[in-house]
Image (tube, rainbow, N blue to C red; front, top):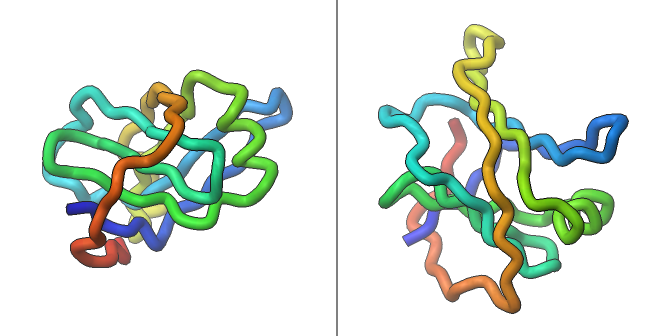
Length: 109
């Protein structure tokens, strides 16, 4: 099952690179993370085995950039401390169609 990531942001740098910021708080380190993207409004972020998140309603500029990139710079941020816990590049895998998924719960962290 997938979880919906509610508190996240995406933006483009001056160079057109895609950056994604999510709340920290996961107890394990990212393990072979990847983002599956089919060219539409949603993407699937696989952080580690058993940890998959839906990134919903990506804006048009991010959609265009995701179609043209092979990686996203991802920051995991401690919202209480307003500090970056970790940052890493996540490969973007272009796919014809996202796999079917059922949302388990909403992640508000």
